[in-house]
Image (cartoon, rainbow over all chains, first blue to last red; front, side):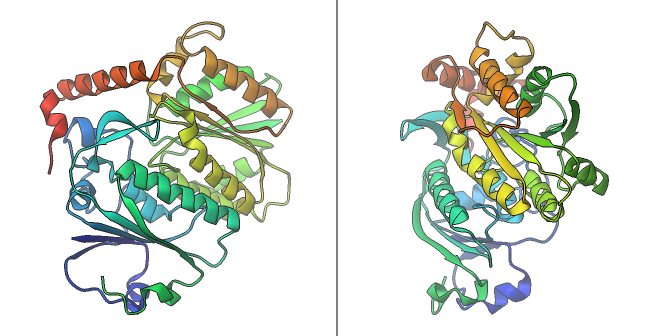
Length: 170
Length: 211
């Protein structure tokens, strides 16, 4: 399964130049998402599942079943948009509370054995060079924490003109 | 001078960010007006925006979430950016303290860069970022003194930060890790997870549940 997380409106999403076929789970903003409360209930109350009951409590399970993660996000200060970041924050049930050392730093152990590649498409009219540099570090750090490989990392001004996605079927 | 201490943790109580700001506050001189704010939710009221825009210094303290800024705080920061970038009344100096559940304070570096990028867009003056590893130990800050104990390095760092804040001085980023060995932090942390799970009626093996 491919997992596509985006912050676009329905119209913007439908206007994209790519084609979506096959087994793709799309996570989009229906304006009901709650923010992570830092309660760690997803590790110590209902391991593997967010305890906030809304449409976004199964991100850990979705990540465990995907072989490719695709993120389309407006760039905010060198990171994801609030909605996409909200999804990332609610995704920690994917990993295990225990620590292990990777790259000579503490990181969380994996809960699942699957492996996925990550593609991130940042868009925005005024992404600065500093923000791009920060975003590159962020995507690398996320890949290290989620034990993923980076497939694509692309910045565009206008989301409807992601040429890299022309003819791409996901 | 008017200083805003902004707690960016979503927790109602016992947050590491709150512990850090509580330890920082007495290090700032009495003659300053210090206002504490808690950004627990996704929106800031216009009153609070106006109050903060009149401060000389803003000190943010928040936990690192997935290598970055917690999403609710990001929404608040965007609201602040829109409000502050047209604020021509006074120069605002910004300091940021990020606490991290991991051992290494330097894992806050990306979130601190984001705050720098935010400061540029919000038209406020970036002064210093601090990353504090071992967030799970910050509850000890309330009980420890400045000169001894496991929180000594945190207190020393906050004292240095306070001196910078009081003179609105810019300084290099500082990243600190706990004063216990990494293996001890790892073992202690994992023991804590098992105890917390047990309190919820779970067994150790339940921590490994797959959905």
